[in-house]
Length: 281
Image 1 (tube, rainbow, N blue to C red):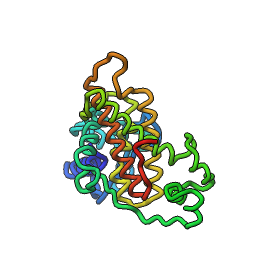
Image 2 (image 1 turned 90 degrees about the vertical axis):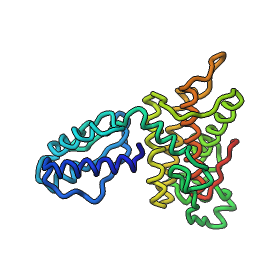
Image 3 (image 1 turned 60 degrees about the vertical axis):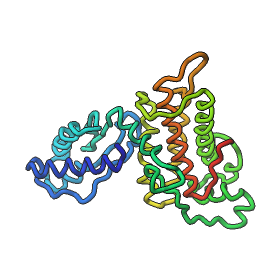
Image 4 (image 1 turned 90 degrees about the horizontal axis):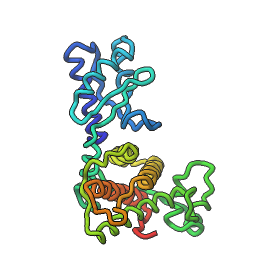
């Protein structure tokens, strides 16, 4: 279930509750789901109960409980919790992540219409010639998207503090894993990785289409950093390749598919920013 799928599910749930007279309110035209800012708060969160509560005059927690019960019964959703003044934290079923990966790997990354939410159309970024001469084309483009206060010269060094290096390193790492897996005789097969540590990465991958559709370069750059950082944290603790005499398993194939999908998303985002995505770094 992608964020777009979940958004439609949440909206449909509100509509059903209104039609059943559980919520005497006007169904909103749009609802939003977002990745929670902290781990342990589900895969996605929505403030729809707060919005509906404003229409009904009922306490937000009561509205949230009505929607929580209905959402928890929807296919693809494992459980729903109420947080704070009435936010709904939604945890997807374990096979939902496999669906995100399958969608991303379902098409050719060179064709934005067939590649599971990958867009690939470059955004207009025009760094000054002096900046290009100083940093090079790739770093100069990323420099336009840096938060205030970041030393642009940092973009020239290959270290963890350099966000562009982290994004490009993560992309190159995904390609290295795919090459090494093929040398070992196995390919990627989307499946359940069954690891809590993969949740932030899957959420970020699932959010790629929404972020890309905004056509906002700064937002896309921060999103790519989130994808890369989530991938590097996950991959450090969950080996994609078998070790020693270990044979490739279903889990290894599922992890490889997750890595390959990550590489596609990072390449797509860098392409939109007009920045090269090297497979060796």
